Amino acid sequence: MQKTDTLEDGRLSPKQLLAYISAELRRALPSHEIAPATDEPGQVRLIDKSSGAEEARLDLANLLAEIFSAPFDASLIDERVTAFVEMARIALVEPNVDPNSIFPALRHAEFLETYRDNAFVRPGPGDCSVILMQDLDAQVGTFPRSRGKAAGWSEETLWLQAEKNFAEVLESIQLRESAPGVFSIWLDHLEWNSNSLLLSPKTLKGIQAEIGAECVLVAAPSRESVEMIDATDTDAFRRLEQWMQDCLDMPHPQSEFVYTLCDEGRKLQPRFFSDRGVLRAMN
Image (cartoon, rainbow, N blue to C red; front, side):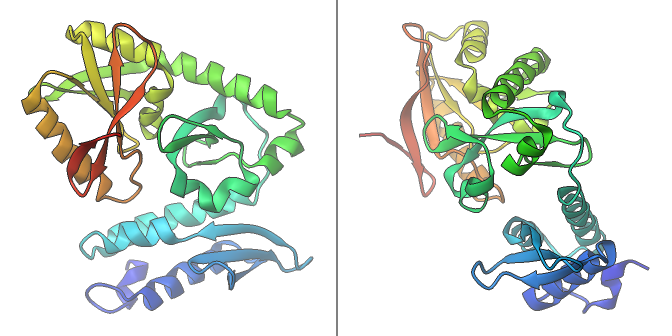
């Protein structure tokens, strides 16, 4: 019997779901108290029972959004909650830092509201920032400053290592025409971080040359891919506009901007922004 079978048949209430998540956290982390964060609704605190110290905070917003945006499915809820609990368990263990597991990742500015104080962050293109993240195979998460300090790594060293790792995975780049005139680009070995291709205009210039366009528009409203079109293709522009709206309406939306990349330069320039499903020119 699945754990969620004991709940009501149909969509769960937020109260039921929070109770279920808290119960699973307590089961997996018996040495910790699970308490709501009174100063941040939607977060829970993991408190060590022996010392009384708060060791971590978990933001439930993305998990709740994923579950409530999908039809009720007990097995899918089990799967997502189990993955979330495992992520929490990993967060409490200071692993040996594998230098090859750290990558720069583009995330929308809103993502950083929860993690900024304990994360390595740099400015990124448009409405995004660059944050260091760690790929632990089973889970991907923010690489906290506390972990870098415990490992004895300087901030400069971490960024250099992350950029080296990212340069190596660029060799796994994939390209396909997902719709007439719309080209999807992603990283085969780093799907969760494919939108970070915006950090490599040189790589995107190579794709531009491959599709034979003098000037292209590039968008990354989701984590899984970057989309590119010929800037003169009006039909592809409309398809890109719809695709962006679809992605921005889903959990974990990323950049709302569309960037231009032309032969005369190697820098992405914000050109349009998505406004309720319509791409409007930047002022």
